Every structure is written in C-alpha cells, then in structure tokens.
Length: 404
Ligand code: AMP
Image (cartoon, rainbow, N blue to C red; front, side, top):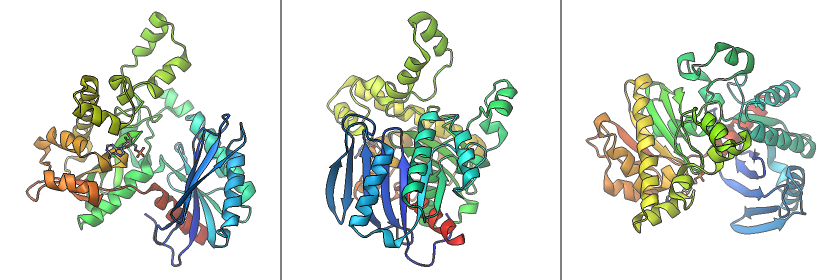
C-alpha cells in the first residue's frame, strides 16, 4: 500500500462494469465514505442510480437507454448539489485489465489510454466500460488528475512457469495469451492488513488469500508478492464461482459445438452466467440462498456447497508448491467474510497443512468481521479480513495526485 497522504483528501472512486457504475467519494486518509452508490441497468429501458449520503439512501431514475455518460453527469450534479467538489483531489478508476504493461497504478495520459485500449482486447466487456468511464470522467472533472488502478497489477510478479499456458509460445508473444490474474487490489490489501494483525512483516510473510465474492480467486503471496493466482487470461479460470464454472476441460468446447451446436457466444454465456453455484444448485448464485436451502435439506444446494469448498481447498493445497511454508490462510469477499459454514468446511479439508478452526471464533467473526479464527495451537493461522478495494484505489490515487 502506498504511504498515506499528509492531509485528509477526498477521492472519487469509479468502478465501471459493462452495464453498471459503482462510485464512492472516500477520504484517502481515514477511509471515511462521504457518498457511495451504484448506477445499474445502464443502457437498458430502466437505468437507475442508488446512492447513500449521510446515512440516507436515495435513488434517481435515468431516462431509458441512458448509459455511463449520463450516469456520470448525474453524479457530477449530485456532487455539486452536496458541495462535495471542493475537497476532491483526484478520480481513481478501477481498471480490470492492465495486461503486462501496467505493474502499478498510474496517472492517466494518452499513452496510458493506449495501453488500456490494447489490454481491452483481452477483456472487451470490462475494458470498454473502463475506457468509457475514464473518458466521461475526464470530460466532467477537467481539472482533476485521473488515476488508473489495475486489478491485474499485483500479479505481475508471477514467474513464467506460473503465468504461461502450455500452448504454442507464439500465442503469448504475438497476442499476450497468458495468465494475468484479477482481484489484485483485494489480495494485496488483505495481505497487508493480515501481516499487521499478526504483527509480522509482509516481506517475511507467506499467505494464501481467498477472495470469495460473486467472483472468486485465490492468491499465493510469498514475502508480500503474488507468485500464483487462480484466475487466468480472464476471470473465468480457477475456482467455482457464483455463476462462473471455473476450471473445466477445454475439450468441452468441441463437444458443445459439434454435438450440441453451441455458438461461441452461447458457450461464453454458459460458462460465465449459467454455471458455478447457480448451475449446480439450479436455485441461485447467491451463497446465502444456497446455505439456507442446504440447511433445509436441498440436495443440490448441499452438493453446490460441497463442490465449492472441495475445489477451493484443492486450489489452496496446490499453492503450497510455490509457497512451501504458509503463515496464514485469509478469507475475504462477501462469502469469505460472512460464511462461517464455508470457512469451516474448507479448513476441515486442510488440517494436514496445520490449519484448524476455532468454532467460537469462527462464529464470532459474523459480528467482529475480522480476526483470527484458528486456535492458538494451530501452526497456520486462519484469518477473516474484510477487503476494501475502494480505499486502496483512493490511497493510490491521492498519492499519485500529490506527486504530480
Ligand atoms: P461480493 O461479490 O463480495 O459482494 O459477495 C457476494 C457474495 O457474498 C454473494 O454470493 C452473497 O450471497 C455472499 N454473502 C454475503 N453475505 C453472506 C452471508 N451472511 N452468508 C453467506 N454468504 C454471504
């Protein structure tokens, strides 16, 4: 994490998805949230902005088909109405794909836009939304420095052995086909916070962090650096997720196209939107719904949870190869921070690594939201650590803005 700026400064953090825009103004020094909200269903017949200011939740309906530009215009009006512009020193953009070019956060200029545009070929949906967010914000906040913070940057320390696919080498050199990894801001943040919690230096800490939200990934962090992670060229690889399949046999493509007449788009939809917890449970992608159904005896919900935990435990165990020694397993993201059931199930399968689960501490984390959930006897600590990607983006943006 960058060193904290000397004065309380406000940063507008923008996170553009293909049809959504998450925003917040944070005090980069204290992490205090001044205003936050979500514009959703952008480009549809019913776009909407929901936001929270001074504890009060409100919503604004946009006109049919209005998209990111209109959402940012409305956001600018909101900022002006509440006199929030005076303290703003920067806009921080979460950019999903930075390719190999971006190993850290940067001030956005024409070259950076070119680099992001190039990387966008690897993740077109996210990339184009990010670029749209940047150009709209540049038009609306003319005097403010704009900073890009990349989801992939933290993983640029991986070695070739970890990031290459066993494909013809030219696909890597000519087209950048390799593993990049995502959720980097989150893995970085929770690792730093866990080192503080355990009172040890991040440079001498080996952690595995499990970011479990709608998207899920695991990261092996050796002496503070990412050495491997479960997501790859896109966020589809690796763990079973809410609606994403995670790892599958690539031979499935041939089967689906030749036997079932699937198009490339249908396969993409199947793997990204209809699989994972939703695909197996045939119920929901929402972990809470599945846990409730599992407790009530729904067999597919039980299977979905068991598969989720088994695959996660298997991936964590595999990361012992690059790490060799593990100090702590970190749970974060909506599921990691809140599901004591999943944490207990995963840890139970990893006892051979020296992990255990203190049931009282695991349940107490529901309320404390943070802490060690393994017993004092455990050789490897299990930790719950809430992520705060917005704050990392705000801190990076504030630091870079002050340097320029
Ligand atoms: P995120 O993408 O980080 O917001 O996480 C979303 C996921 O967290 C969804 O699958 C939610 O069902 C899950 N989640 C949130 N709260 C809980 C909870 N109390 N128990 C289990 N899962 C939860």
